[in-house]
Length: 267
Image 1 (cartoon, rainbow, N blue to C red):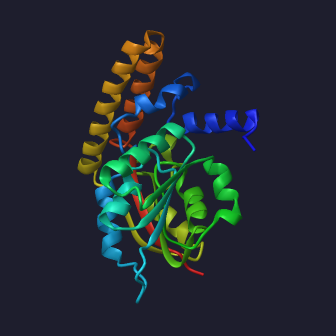
Image 2: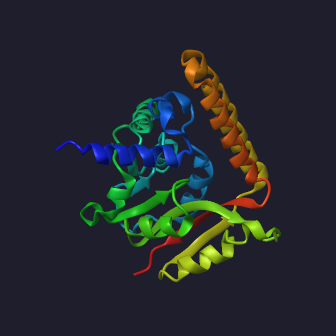
């Protein structure tokens, strides 16, 4: 049965909110984020950390299974399949991103290891019947840390791992306006209260993150200019969108820091 009009509108609202875009840019998200395999995550960093954990089961011959919740254009999911030879399912609410992810998997020669599904992440994570005993679950650049932790842990087997990220407050920042943003340690403590073990929690190095963000912002600006030439009526909206993205990225060089957690699920 096709989704209701209300469901489609709700999903559309969730998608544009996830990238902080106005609704009128929704039909153009594929063009706006072209040539951007990830929307802020660092696949190479994640691959290095997961490889170092050695999460394969003793005597197991079949590939490990991973699920990327909010996979975006598929950069991390494809890296899991290509670099770590995992079988990967990617979920995202944006059909344009799913199309990009499938194209990326085909270009990387791992389309047989990847399955991408366009569906509401809100609904998918609430559907217990869809949960599986994955070895690895990821949610990157989607929901706040604790919401992401609760969602991803439901998809992994006991002893499996989940990976989340979020912005945390720099401990050196005593600005009252940012005191409600948790620190890395606070989030780690709350994750441990779920009964899980934090294997790795780190504030991401500013130089490395600045390099990633600079590349993303550069490509986004290029895409926006190209789109504005094709759709002149969107020029002002696109300029405001790019400016907002740049301002948000700038916060990671001030009171906020990017952080990542790799967690082993307990009972």
